[in-house]
Length: 251
Length: 261
Image (cartoon, rainbow over all chains, first blue to last red; front, side, top):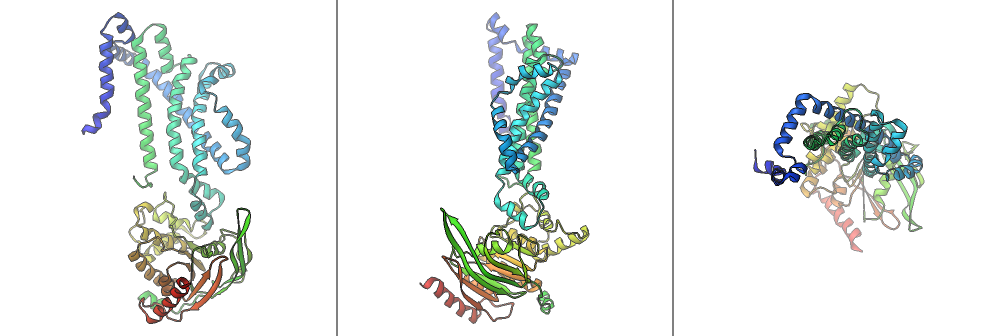
């Protein structure tokens, strides 16, 4: 492994060191900063009982489902707004007004309509993924260069062919950037919604239960899990988009 | 040379272009700006016409009108006696920038021009391969545009414009962005390709030498408003010698006219 590959590990390791140091100062420190050994044994315990995987899986599935809904809906809505001026005039004011409301601010209303079950959480996650997808799709379709459109017209492509073969591929870099944002939002709101609507499985629910039982080490395990999984998913996403966008000149 | 000897007897029968009283005005800050005024032009099938003129003489606008990208004009554009309305596959165009789609390989870019033809796929594949061969890009079928040099990308753009067998090929300063050596090489290529394909070609350029070397006719345009000043017939058979005395004399004369006053 090259030196610059491990450089990213320096800060996390320093942080761990500081954490361990703080936990050894006094009783209050040991409560606020659980000793790493305790975190480790909690990790082993949660893995052994299957609790961690079940909850992690529930959060992941919800994130992916919501993300898929958000991506499909967002590309559709964004494309509609970018390609049809009447649709844009009709939808844009409402969309931009609703988008100002923080996602978690919807939770009381959504809980009232859908209860605190899976469908409420899924709606929140989908909504969180939808916003960046609509914005990025809209902007990148709007910015497709005029010369691409002209070349497509000269080649006598039909409207649907232009959309499929020219406009969407041209907008793909922007849409891919949108997916990366949407993924982050979906993951955060998926866990976040569990904190508010704590029913059923999920990392957030696990954290709420742990908090009630004053099990700090479990909370720390969950936080680590959330960070790691989010990082992994966006890394996978970046790999995928690099593959899809391999036609772009490397800079 | 073989290809040329073989292609000479075929003279084009399609691709007569007639412009009648063609005028075009833009609104600039609310005032109409005359870009083209009363352009009258008869182009024979299979003729290579070069258009030169100072910038602002509307020569590129003229091509946009003929290709059908701009339909807001007065006058008539007739192709084989039929009025031109909007873009059509019987007119191909190559711009100064190659305008290949960066997400498609060279082969996909050229095949896209055949998208709406109802011929069998194998026939399409053959046509694409033939045209890649024609512009000398065999072996680069699967390259993306950013992997090609400027000259290669422009060859690919020419192949894309030709693969539909257009009656008229419009070239809008096609070699303008290339370095001098590549330009000279591509001028020879263009001549060879034209002799082989024998479609009508209208090429806008600001390189007088290029206009004379390739054109059966050289149209000189004036600016403000854009209009035809002179219509020179260059009676030299193709392929031509670049350093021919006749061309040289014409060049001196045109340079004097265009730069002189």
